[in-house]
Image (tube, rainbow, N blue to C red; front, side, top):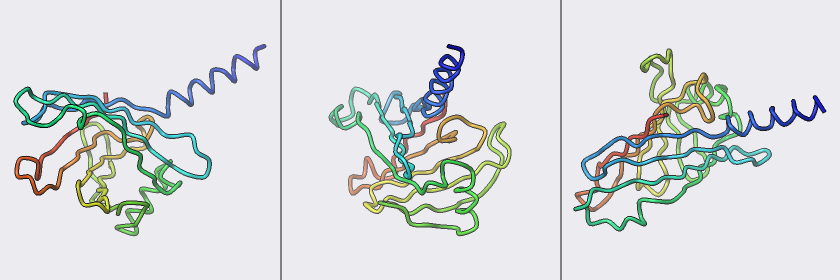
Length: 166
């Protein structure tokens, strides 16, 4: 019985560590929002799913349904730990399915010492994603995710959404 309880606790703990919740900071066109990032349980792959729900300001002419959804990013398996970020730091950039990863710098960010700053440049060229990673953080280890939109629509081109770990 004790063994069953210990196993149940370990499985629950592992599941809790596989997801993190973020708050979307207020912007010019949106009031707030939430992002949930979770590691998908797939053997031999490292897939990260981002569920997002952004609340637009009332006067913004964008359908609300476009501001809620999910996206999945696939990283090399070594990104489950700091090893992937160390490898990226040495290589400076690497290609992953549907994107290019770029190492930007290592620096302190708030209480995080020597955090990794990286960029994800999707091949579709519709966004640029800046991520701050630190191995002491839960789930994927991301403290901050900043998405910059690249668009032919002037209102959206260069627009930024910033999500910070709760």
